[in-house]
Length: 281
Image (cartoon, rainbow, N blue to C red; front, side, top):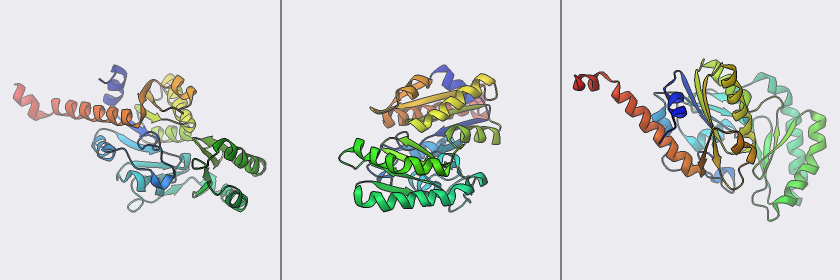
């Protein structure tokens, strides 16, 4: 059963429903390319569109995110808020925030450094290139702790010198543009569409920025109806579980909640339709 708070968010319009992808809508995979949406999730996102502004907010680049999600006419926010598209890239242009452009060349140099040194020393690591910046995944490494340490030792000092952020996700080290995160992206999204209610769901450290931003906007009254959801896995950060309003168990739990949301919204729409009222008369 949906909580009263969640029902209130869904019925307060205009509403925004936003979701991380990996670990939230799709199970974590050994490589980014191997990820697949949980069965039925794409259809549920499509069914939510008549009732809310739907967005995915991800560390993936938009091209990668769109290939995975495959749903048009929703907002794709990629690379932690650096990239935006109002639907699938084959139909809608990808916009990059102009303030990030200054970091393109420094990021390219650092990723080239990572490839030069990590490819021979750490062949199990995978470098994921993005429009600006990138991610080094070490999930496939037999000794993840050691791999993480090698990556951080190589990149920490040059990243600091270039002004880039070096952050961590699940079995990944990310090279990012400073000042951009999922929280900043959510606020931009809410302001752009003048939303009065919003939901955000995520499972990783980078999702905490989104959770904290929604809590702040709710307290300030600029988005008075807001709810945050943590998707619990064995490695979900404790702070995210502590700060979120609701917790669901794994991607399957998130998919089940999505289905409940869709069923509720479709039922409410049916109950208020003229045809239903005429039958009651």
